[in-house]
Length: 138
Image (cartoon, rainbow, N blue to C red; front, side, top):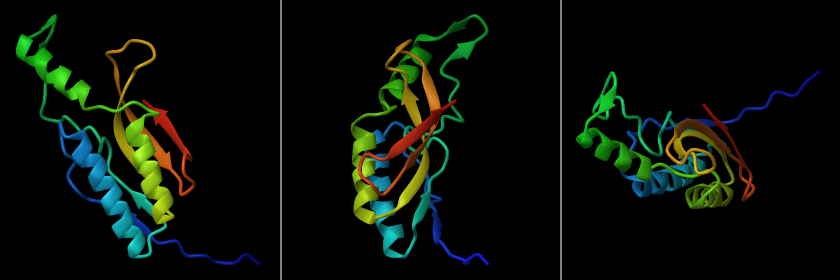
């Protein structure tokens, strides 16, 4: 016979902070601590929470080209993305360790290894042991 075990899960439904990476990371750390204080052991954040989901931005694209204004918006969006691993992952890992929780969230990740200009919508899993994380880029 198996033992039944209950795990409290917190689902965060906060708006992401487009073009405000540091604000988003601070919100993740604060919200994670609040959820842990309410008994959550797993905290789930939305897709592209850090970096923001650009659903209304076309980045000035049309078939065959991109406008200068679109290039500037893309550069701003790219500059607010994070590297994985990187300082933001370290900060969020420390928050998860302090709160003793696991969390999953979507981030906009810069490809700093190959192209330098590609962004990925990445799912990051962070555990309660500092420096325990994994990611899946898509």
